[in-house]
Amino acid sequence: MCELFAMSGSQRYTAQEYLPPFADRSRDNISGWGIGFFRDGQVVIEKSQEEVFSGDQIHDSFNRLARVIDSRIILSHIRCPKSGHRKESHAQPLADEFLDHHWLFIFTGESSNLMAYQSPRPLVPEPLLAARVFECVRDGMESGLADQPRQSLYQVLARTCKRMLAQYPGEYMFFLANETVLFTFHNHSQVLTYHDPKARGDLLILTTVTGGLTSHPENWCSFAQQDPQRGQILIISGADLLYLGHL
Amino acid sequence: MCDLFALSASRSYTAATSLPLFAVRGRKNVHGWGIGFFHRRSPVVEKSGEKVFTDGRLHGSFQRLARVVNSPIIVAHIRYKSSGRVDECHAHPFTLDFWNQSWVFAHNGKAPAIEPYSSRLEPRLEAKSDSARILEFLRDFFVEAESRRSRTPFILILKDALRRLLREYPGEYNFLLTNGRVLWAFTNHRQFLLLKGSSKLEDALLLTTIDEGLSSENWKKIVAGPGSGGRILLIAGGDLLCLENLE
Image (cartoon, rainbow over all chains, first blue to last red; front, side, top):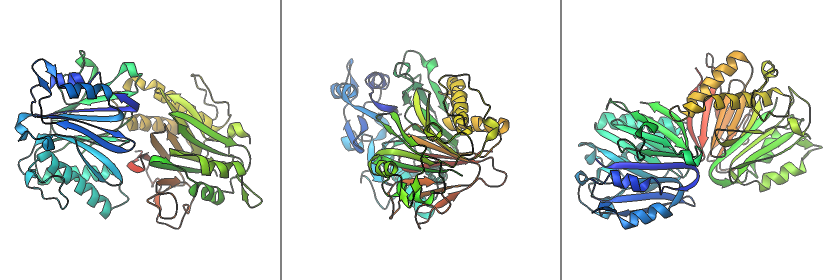
């Protein structure tokens, strides 16, 4: 299974303490990696189809980027071999612009039906489940807000995810971020969160890696989801978990 | 009765059109005014005990500030005193720190029951008014709840705080609370009016308590319905993220 990472801070931080352990602990996923972040409101993505960890070393570019990228929100994805061909265009994050924002998206999960989803505005032509999920979520949010413009973003995202689960049962976990807010959704497994004590509570780390990314797994909070028919949405801004909603 | 105004956007904005309109439509409030925003994570408040509108003219400083203040979140208040003296110290917004963040707060309503509230924490606000005590009450509650921060969404702690506030100090509460990234609003009397994507004012999310809004456009009216303890709004990056009832 692919692994996801996010960092959200109240100011710009590098993720240099967390991205290398993320790569280290995801080293079985050899089909590519990506890091996405925001600069002046625009999305920047660096990604590769190469192994994030080979021999005894983290990919050189991944390591250097981890030291250099600073942003209030950073997303990273490490891709597992089950996700199809090793192509850079298949690596994540994916990005798009809708609802007046630039968005970054990373996904892990499985759904046999959703590959058949046909968006009126496909992101990439290739058969890539992450792209189909992103399209489905984006299309659902756009049409939901067009139909009922007075809904909150949480309401429209929750309705979109509910419909997706009903129409395309499967296991979904995604992180979706604009320059201000990070949304996560999952209906299986768990999201782990950690407040960096050195940043005086100013920095929140999220990951899907079991046990977290530090030597003290007990310091990580688990938001686990057992029932795949349902799911939960977290809303995060800065280092604060603002909202937790169950479908 | 005082009136409130807020602007939220994903990038810095001036409220050069909507702030003067807010002052004109709220000119019956003759006991001071204030504008709060954030500059490099630090709160900045400019306020005055003078009338915002006299002899058919806006207060010169208010007008100049409206043209100049440039921030993703701007909060403004014009005062009709129900508690405390008429001077700059009693004008809103107020600021206090908790959770390693600075917060800007403005209130509309009458809550005389909270005037005797005595905070056990420092600093205390100099103003002797219900509004100052409300912010101290919220600060104290969040400081006490800080150990829950990593696991508990902010909105649940805010709801706990509001339930205790309303139980122990019944009153009328309309307030805005922002850390410069997200804006929380609460109402249990009168209303908030919300507009996004204005073609006449700033193309940001605008919020006010002014009955008719600030333009002839389709403002969304948010009121606490019968049986509801109030309504909570979470706003960030120019979006209404959540709208919840306080049960």
